[in-house]
Image (tube, rainbow, N blue to C red; front, side, top):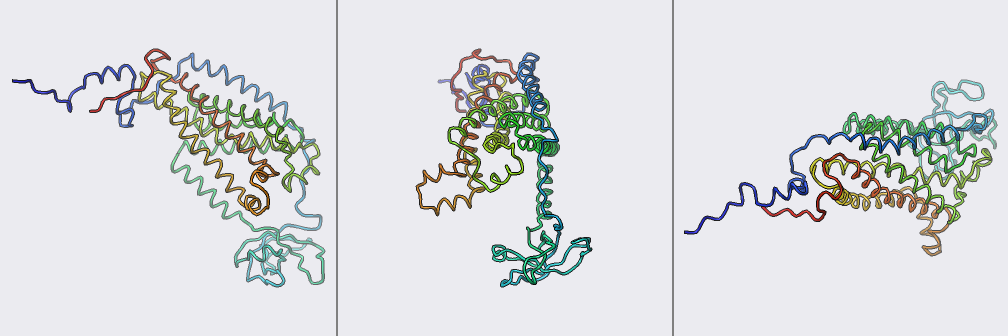
Length: 431
């Protein structure tokens, strides 16, 4: 009588335990159904010292650059007045339909408004609007910013001229909604991220813009700004951990590569920065400003946000892989995390490209209507500037992913070391 065949649906399958012990991977690990392993072990003292050996000098150089490049208040150009002497900017509300023939909009000034030294709050006025806004149209209740001109040109001309729509309320609502959504989903981590974002804007407002306007070295300003912002944003949002330090180190490496590529690309492609209306009149008020340097600084700063995203993702991926596979080698961790990184690269390429298309849609339509080849259009003026910016930022982003992944694989806590077990495709037998 033959012996019954073994029941393969229950009990351990021969070889499975040995394979898990050798690699640290199981079927549950690969498919995300394994039991939680708890938080990753804290980084060793050696790892912390190694990270500090790179990050502390980077921070010191950043602070030294901040001091060296800090603009003297006396050198910062004076603010440009919005209205000429005798004129004033007022707020008003549209009270009726526009006269399409004359371009005059009936409106009522806000309470407390003063024009020509007199209290005009609540007065009914007519606002002169340019033809393009007449075609756009005005609705009753629209909030306007109007310019009062003491000596209106032309007989019977209104002294009130349309400047812009008042958008404070809808933008404020969107900002509050954004903050509420971030806090509702990310909670304390979201609050920390918003605080880091506020800190970044403080750095840009108080250092970056004045430094550029006073003619400080644009590449130095870009590196100091991006480095300082990343130190603030990452540690405030993600905490002082080895995982965050790993992502920060990868981000700084990506920023350095972006700066070098941007410096070469803007020079080799003769990116002058003289492609917008602002670039033509700003030097009149800030003679020390280097417009080409502003473009270079913009290239570096544009890469900060996306770099931060991918480096944090890659560092977290390595830590989570270690949590489910504590015995996997560092080489295996790197290989598997790079699978995630490649997917991230593919999606980010689309993100960067379509973000540019959305922001530059009117410019792209002008290119479409121009009677010249696509190659000529892409290498001309403002389009070329954006192409260089996008390509340089994308290259820095792509290179930052393997750099960050390698740093994370080398620093993540674990018992396995590189080369301690065979490396190869992990095969899990079918149940």
